[in-house]
Length: 116
Image (cartoon, rainbow, N blue to C red; front, side, top):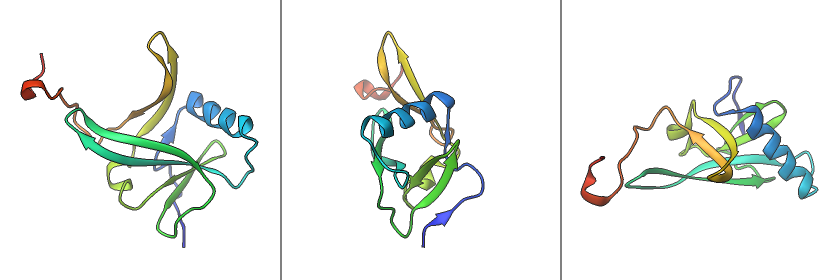
């Protein structure tokens, strides 16, 4: 059975909520769709995240809702994502979702393993 969490497991900023709503509208998706967030891997620069629009939750998914947007996280990824905030930025560097994760220390680039 899908677990519903009373508090935000992952918080969506107002800009992220609007971006997800826009995606739902552009694709004419029905209300049963959710915004899935997961850890896709790890590299020397930190965790890599994936996001998808999903209408088939797994029994072990954790579910929360922010401003009417259902957010799904699998039971493994939640260990790394609990308390994270997802924002949507549109600036001179491009546009897209950004994960601000308090559970992960900033990582350095691969070269030499040191920053600076």
